[in-house]
Length: 379
Image (cartoon, rainbow, N blue to C red):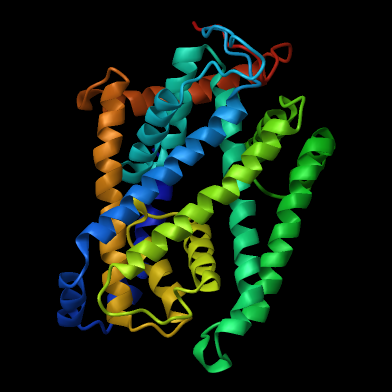
């Protein structure tokens, strides 16, 4: 557990919460919460679970081309050795750990659980998860750019707190950089690793930072290279867009569950795309488990662009975030039990996931002859 990272997350969350609650009239917040259409709000939570299911479907496309020593080969070329319910359970277990435990260990737990069942090297599974995050980032940047191109037609200059043109340039540059980075990783990963090594050689940064940077480059590039055909990557990219469209629909249904209407620009297609992209891109910053504070601040900031009433925005941010955490807790605990584990195993599983991931990476560093993304022999 990284104490400095937890401390930084605590500081960021505290600052965000301060700006969220400053000057809020809580009687108005309570009034807005008391008027929620509960069935409609619960429907938005079901859409969240549907988005997780789409993420699971995408993950299966990324896993299918990989060698899984402990699983039988599929019956035909189009078949899969993975069942969606099993992968969904591991996916939700990972998000359960991300939401309620420090340092966002859920990705390591997901890699550990799948590696234990399939015999795959943990770094191989982690590479597919890193690719997932990259596709999510590209999809969100594309949505942000599209929304900012449409925003001038649905908002007036006086109603926007942030210049859409400026944000459009930032999103466009970020999108081009992300796509270009993928191409560079795929074509020139070895050269890029050497460039990074030379950079650290002439800078005062400690050696562990150099090893970490090179390790990340090799892991991500190796994860891309295991795909001999572009088909699974293309399908994963398309599903990523679908995932975030469903998330935008989740926002829409949750917004409609409030009796007091939100600004029409916010519930327009451009507004929903903008809010979805801004909130989820902003969650990359460190925070407390469950993104407490940062999530509320991002939602309130996105709504402020459209001059939404702050009490209404705070009410939405609080109930929407709490709803997601409660549903993730309920489904995550059930998914964890489905792995034939109990709540007493939570901390040991997290520790084993971290130690096995570190051991796999150390093996790759210490054994040049071991292929970085091949089967792992359990010891």
